[in-house]
Image (cartoon, rainbow, N blue to C red):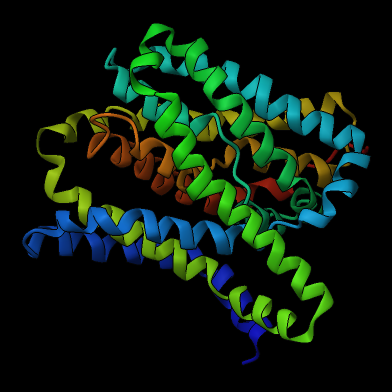
Length: 322
């Protein structure tokens, strides 16, 4: 099996790999004492995962994405206007606990930039167009997330989203891995060695994501204790979001008169969130562990189940003509 075939096999089976990582992590967290010490490994694992994830983000394709004005307009309108309004309505059904609301907002306000492309391809969406737009989505969500948190949480946000730690986490765990990935991409274009290194690293996103899920879950499980009820309180909201968000995306794509394939890409983007990319930002919130990581990982697990349904149902969206 060559590198390309192995990468395709990993991506096709990634949902089951992630679930396996979580199940093993839960078992380890319950059976092995003191797995809380794995907290120290979360940030290094996240930095690795984000680097290899960003390596798949086509920075050079940013210009192409910006030229697709109708698609880009619909994608941005869905993710940064329609979805935030949907989320604002859904969080009203959550407990008043600001940490619960913060965790849900952080994950639901940020569109996915990585495995959504694979799922979109499996769901007969225009995955190439979605892939080209990922740098725009990343930049926009990082710029807008603090603004949305302050709008939706008000004064409560100031107590939890301190600029210093937030900026530090963003620089070291998001910006630097993104820049390093862009440099490797440039090296791959100019050098055969760089191309081989980039291709080899292309195998890493799924294992690296599974590693992060394992470390986070194994570290958090022993600490859940009385926070379990609070964590489970978010499940109905996540399920409602998984059902409603793609429909919102599809409706907006209809107003924009996109092709069915492009419309499905917008629907996939609306329903798929950037949970593990925002995790390092959530970890710097005072008192976040174990509740906020647990809330974010819970969304990931529900979303993975939803993706299995999306790839079967989304192809049916498209009876209309562009």
